[in-house]
Length: 301
Image (cartoon, rainbow, N blue to C red):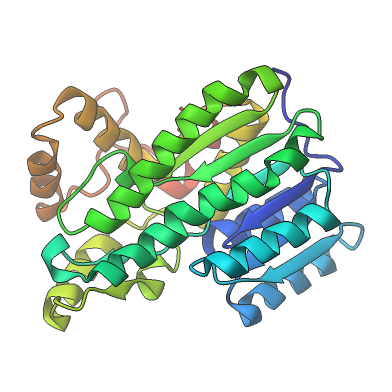
């Protein structure tokens, strides 16, 4: 399969108002792509759009406000995109939400909210837009899973379930679409500095003290800038990588989960409690650059 060509492509990005999605929008515009951006946050999406139009006046930017938790609204937006943009070369299903709490601390509705946005919307948009991608030679699909689509820590039953589902869906699609010349990439970010903890919901059975402690611990992992994550992802797309892991905070847990599938969680929790939140692999000197300075090419799996 030839390298992906960003120039003149129509790229659809969900969750484009902040974080990785906004960074991807800027990076795609720099590469010469026209943009179709989706989010539910009108103010932030307008700000991203204005900045891109100011920096890249030759690029077309279309925006759609949608709450991906709403299956009917998602279907309507997908149909409109398919009609207005009949040749989508790149679809990035990036939007995602979190939910704090063990399985017995969250309601079924709370659990379903995560599954709807993180997985059902991915399937729904992909199903709706796949015909437009088949019409565009060299198209590519990117589904953003997570570190928690590689490992499943306690307190993340809903989120991990949704992200493992994205991973399995994406891997199966990769095999199904290869003969159509459509590339498919599953992305597993490690600790990216996004607004996911700010936007996450707290399970009904979780105390504020418990949530605050868990959030403080989790935020120690958020060391990678969204702009660098976007560059890593697009480097992977260009090279038609099937899987992209971003940062050692994703790569090391992935290795541990494959080598020690039944006991990796205990090792990771012990390391986190001791402050080892950005482990250095044995082959890398202890004075290796910080995550933000790492070569993006080294982050592509």
